[in-house]
Image (cartoon, rainbow over all chains, first blue to last red; front, side, top):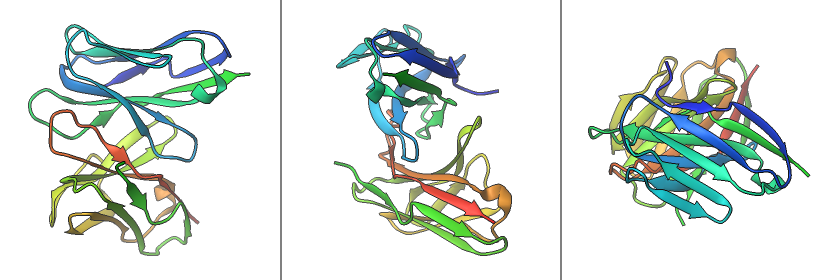
Length: 112
Length: 113
C-alpha cells in the first residue's frame, strides 16, 4: 500500500484547460512537498505546504494542504505546454521522520 | 542555489560489473539519499545517510551498498550489476528538519546489458 496516493495517474489536456491533481493519505504529515520532473531530469521542488488549510500560489499553480494535513491538491489554471511533466507529492509522517516518501506521480501532457 | 551533481547522465554497464554512482552536494546538507525510479513504481528509497560514515537501508537495499566519507559526497555502489538494476538513479540531499524538502541531482540513467 502506497503511503501517498496520487490521482489521476495520467492526464492529457489541451492548452488553456484547467486541471487538478490530488495527493491523499490516511496519515498525518508535518508538511508536504510538490515537485515537477521533466523527462530525463531530476525532480525540482515547487512548493512546501506546512499548515493545515494553507493555500500557496505559484503563478498559475495553486497548492492546498488539507485541514487535517492528510491530503493536498495542485490546481493549474490555463495549462500551457511548458507545464508538461510528472508531478510528484512527497512528505514525511508526523513524528519526527525526515525521510521523504513519494507518491507515484501524475503524468501531465499539455497539447498545444 | 542548491546544487546536487551526479557524476554521469548515462551509463551502460555489463552484467557482473561493479558500478559506482557518485553524487556531490554544495549546501552542507546533513542528509543524502539514493532513489531509483521505474515506470509505474515511482521513487523507491535505496539508502540514505544522515551524517558522514553513517548509513541506513531504505526500502530496496539488496544488491547495493553506499559510502559517505565526506559530508558533501554520497556514493552508490552496485556490487555486481544485474539487468534488473537497469533504472533511473536519483540522488538527493536535505537538511534535517520536518519540512523534508529534498534537492535532486539530474539523475543517472543506468543500463545493464
